[in-house]
Each structure stands twice: as C-alpha cells, then as structure tokens.
Length: 285
Ligand SMILES: [Zn+2]
Image (cartoon, rainbow, N blue to C red; front, side):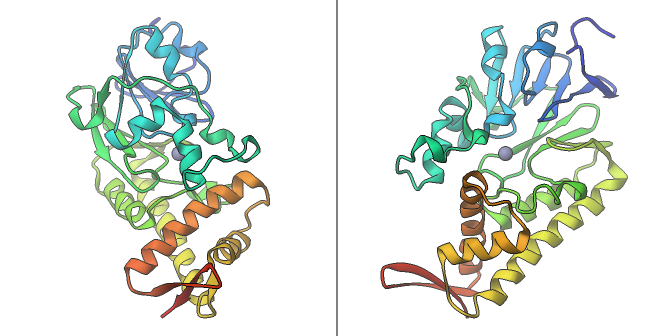
C-alpha cells in the first residue's frame, strides 16, 4: 500500500478508500471526505483538501488537525458556521437560549475548525458534490471519480434502524427528496457515514426502507393527533412508539426531529397548530 494513504484505510475501487471509524471517512488521492475520530491514521497521509458532508462534530472530529497540517477545509455555506463554531448546534437545539452543560449532547460538542472554502464553489476533479439536505440544511454528498458516493448521514442502512429508530432530521421532506437523489446517482458503491459500504444494486432496498420509516412516522402523527396534543406530548408519543431510550441527549434530538415532522405536516395542510393555556397544540385536520 502507498505510504501516503491513511494506514487503516480500506481500498474500495480505483483510488477511493474508506477510512473506518465511528464515522466512515473517505480518501481519494489526498482528498479527505469527513474524518474519523482519530487523527493517527492521517499522520502518514498527504491531505491537501478536506470536504465535510455536514456540520455535526462526529464528521469533522479531527478536521482541525488536518488543517493544522496544511489541508484546506471545505463545507457547505449553511453548515460552515457549525464547523467553525459547534456551539451553534447546541444553541439551536435549545431554541437559541443557553442550555446548561448537562443538556448538551456529545454529538454536537466538537473542536472548532476554520473553513477555507464553500462546497458551493467546489471545483476539484477528485470528486463532485451532491447536495443532500434534510439531516442539516447544507448536508452534501461526495461522488468520487471512481463512482463512490459518500452519503454522510443522508441514508441510514436498514440494519441501523434498530439502534437509531428516529434519525435526526430537520426537514423530513428534504430527507425524502435526498434519498431519491441517492437512488438516481450513477455510482458503483455507496458509503454511508455509519454502517458498511454497499454496492449499487443494494441501494434501492435501503432507500425504500428509509422512506417507509419516514412515512410510518408521519402516519403515526396524523393518527395520534386526531386527539390534540401539545408539542411535548407529540415528541413523547413518537419517541415511545419508536422505542427511543430515555435520556436527555435522545430527548433533545427527538425534539428537533419531531418538530421537523410537525412543520412539514402543517405545511401540507394536514394538521393545525394553536395555542391554548399558553401551550402549543397540534391537531389533525
Ligand atoms: Zn449528523
């Protein structure tokens, strides 16, 4: 193996490698796509550019180390501020008020990293960028010149749903559209950030399963909101039905995701929102 490739990298096809970890990262001829949580594998690699799929700390864990070693860092305009100041995620989670330290999830705590360029201005021949919003506003996939699509957190494999029954999403409608984009991209492999790389032939089944889960959550809300519920009750009913574990981190992630579903159903004219006794209520129309 080349001495300038991350030492634990798994060869996929052509010049494209997967750097395994809590987050699967990519490597193509000195271009890194996201990072794993450990900077050691990168010590031997010459990395001149790092593209980040989105502004969650587990995707840019050691970006600051790569940048200190001379790499430029690129993120989507909408997510760049989350990379440069991960605290913004924590404040957003708490409606911009200041949460106590006990409420902040490890997922959102990260080491800030300056962003040198926006993915919107991407012009690198080693990969093309493919916007896949919904998990975050600026969430972006990378299709390498070898036809490997790194999808970040836009696609959850079927076997991951047991452990992640309510994947974080700020806009489920956008997630669904992005899943169709993933389905339509001509590629040889798809590498989700969590789980195993899958071959093209397998993609459709995983996309269908993800879409079905989104539809089930919408159906659940429409059915259960036939009797009006507060926002808090709506979060609780979805969390319980999906079998989430009861802890502050899961709760706060669920708050955002369930609000994403409520906002979408409201936009579709399928539910209404009103305030009563100074609480916010939702009801199926
Ligand atoms: Zn994420």
